[in-house]
Image (cartoon, rainbow, N blue to C red; front, side):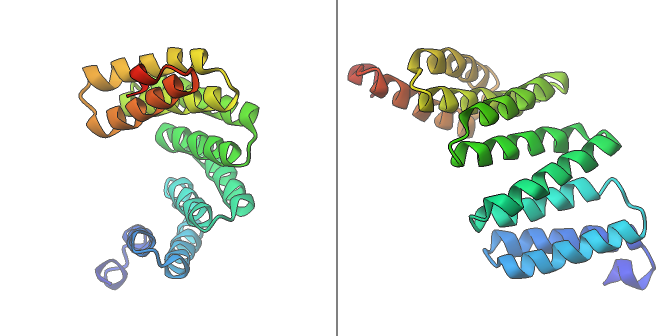
Length: 193
C-alpha cells in the first residue's frame, strides 16, 4: 500500500510478488496466482523487465505444486526466455533446474539430464556452489532412473565433496540419501546404510 500511495510502481509490483510468495507458502495457490498475475501485469505495464523472469518462475512453481506440469513447463520456458533477455543468470539456472525436474517427473530422462547439465554449467559460471551440488545430485538421480548406479555414484561423490567442503548440511542430507539409494540399487546394503 505504501508503494502504491507514493507512486513507486516497481515497489508495488515487488509487493504483489511477495504476497504471492506468502500465499504459495501457505498452500493457497489461487491467491498466490492472483497476486503473481497482478505483479506480472504491473511489471509488464511499467516495463519492469527484471522482475518478469522471477514472477513467471513463481507462477510455474504454483502450477508445478498443483501437478499441472504442462502449464508449469510453459511458464518455466517463459521465465527462461525472459531471464535470458535481461541476463539474469540466477533465474536462468533456476529455470533450467525446474525444467529438468518436470522432465524427470514425466519420465523424460534425456531431457531432464540435458536441463540439469545446463543448470550445472551456469552454476559453475556464477560460482554457485549450492546450484552445483543440486545439479550433480539431480544428474545422479537421473542416472539411477537410467539404471546406472555407478555413473550416479560418480556424480554424487562430487556433490558430496562440495556439500561437505562448503558445509551445506541440507544439501549434504539430500546427497547422502541419493548415495544410499545408489548403493541399495547395487545390492551393497552395508554401504547403503
